[in-house]
Image 1 (cartoon, chains in turn red, blue):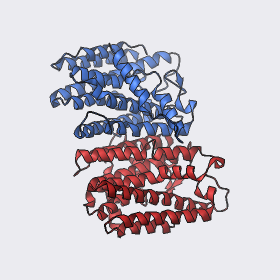
Image 2 (cartoon, rainbow over the protein chains, first blue to last red):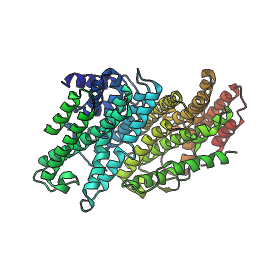
Image 3 (cartoon, chains in turn green, orange):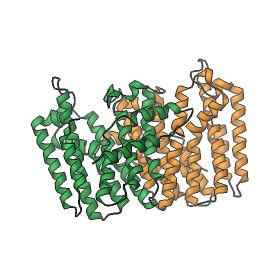
Length: 279
Length: 279
C-alpha cells in the first residue's frame, strides 16, 4: 500500500537536484550518489501517509517530505566520516567519502542541509505562514536541541555512563526528532488543531524511538560474534530488554493513533511494518 | 563610526547561543568558542549599515545579520578541517578541531548552519513573507550555487586550469555571495524597490570580490618566502595585477553606490576601509 507513495518520493528526489554542467558538478553528482541510493524513505513516507490520514492532498507535502530525506541523507554522510563512525558502506554501496573523497563528503552534507531549507521556502501550494512554521520545526528537530544533540551524545557517551535516561535522550534526538518533524509537517500543511497535533507528535516520538531500538537489535544480530562496539540500547540493557522496549514503544505509538478521531489504518500499518522489519 | 554597530552584533552573538546545562553542552561551548572569537563581523555590519542607508531601524536586521555570521563561522570551521585546508589557527586561536576535536568541529558547523535558519524563522518584527524571502536568499547564497560552489571549485582547482573566469566564479561564490546576502537582507527588511535592490546587489558583488582579492594579497605577503601554496588571484595573475583588480572592483562598488538616490556615506566608508585594511 506504500509503493505508490515511495515511487512518488523517489521520482521527486531524482528531479530535485540541479541537472546540467556546472563548475561544481561533482557536488551535485555526489549528492545524487547518496540521496538516490535505495533507502527506506521512512521519514518522507510518514509525511505523506499522515497527510492521507488527515485527508489532505499528499502532493502538497511532497517537497517538504523530500527536504526531510535530504536532512536524513546529510546526517548519515557526515556520520559515516572517518572522524565519526568511520563507515565504509551505506545502503549497500561505498560511503560517500570512500566513493568520492572526504572533503567533498563534508561539503555535500552541508549542501543537502542548506538545500532542504531552500526546498521548503520555494514549495508550491503553501502560504508563507506555513513555510515559516515548517522551517521552525525543521531547524529545531534537526538542530542542536534535536538531531545534532543526539549525535553529540552518541559520539561522546561511554558505556560506564550509559543509563536508560541518557539512551532515551540520545535516541529521541538522533532518531525520533525527524519522525516528529514528519508528522508536524503534515499537521502544518493540513492546518489541524493543536490537540490532534499533540497526539500525532506523541505517536511519532514513540515510533521513532522504537525504530532506533529495532535498528540496534538488527545491528546486534549482524555483529553477533563481536564485542559490543557501541553504546546503544542492546549493549546497555541486553537484547531481551531491548526487544521488550521496542514492543512497548510500538504499543504506545498504536495507542496514540487510537486517540485520533480519524481512520488511521495507514499509520498503524507503518508502525507494524517498522516493528517487524528485518533490515 | 562602526563601533556601535559591531558592539551590538557582538553582544547579540554572545546571547544567541543556548545557555545552561545540557547533555550536549560541549556543542554549545564549541559553537561559542568559534562564534565569539574576535572577528571583523563584516557581513552583519553590512546588513546593519545598509539598513541605516535605507533609513530603516537597524535593530530589525540584527538577528538576520547574526544568522549570516553563523553561516560564515560554520563555513570556516568546516574549511579549516584536516580534509580541507587543514589549518591549525584561526582568528588568533587554535582552530576548533584542534581546540576540541574533529567530530565535534563537523557537528558544530552543522549546528551553526541549521541554527541560522531557525534564527531567521523566529526573528521579531518581520512578517512571514519577509522571513521566507530571507530564507530563500540565505539558502541560495550559502548553498550549492553559492558559497559551497565556491568551496568546491577552491578545493579542486589546479593551477594549470586556473584562468580569470574560473577565479571570478570561485571568489564570487565563496566570498561575494554572503556579501550579496547581506545587502539583500537589508533590502528585504526595508522593502525597497527592485531597481534599488539590484544596484545594491551589484555593489555587494564587487565589494565581496574585492574583499577576497585583498585577502589573497594579504595572505601572499605572509607567505612571502614560500612557494605559492594555493590557487588564487595572486598566484595566477601576480601581485601587481591583483592589486589593480582590487582597486578596479572597489571603484566599481563605489560607482554603484553613487547610482542610489540616497546618502550612502556609511557604505562608502566600509568600501574604503576594506580596500585599505591590513588584516
